[in-house]
Length: 104
Figure 1 (cartoon, rainbow, N blue to C red):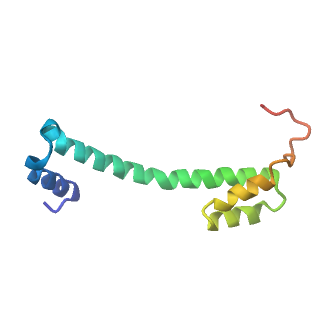
Figure 2: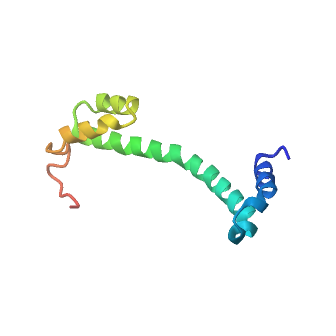
Figure 3: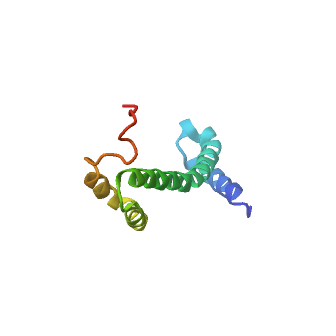
């Protein structure tokens, strides 16, 4: 079969006699299910990365005067520098929240 999922299922069928007897009947559905779950979750990873970049941008904008620089460096280092930036900003007051009450 030239279809990737069907090809993988056929390969599992071929080696099915070498699989442990207790999971032999579930081997093909289990393999195809894990393959599809991997496909779905692989599309979710970029969305989570984009959401984390957006959250860091909002934090940088609220606590730093140079939020664009912090954000660009954060993008280039895949947010490793965000740890240092957050440590530097930990005691700064939030901009625009002086007169408002916070939720915490």
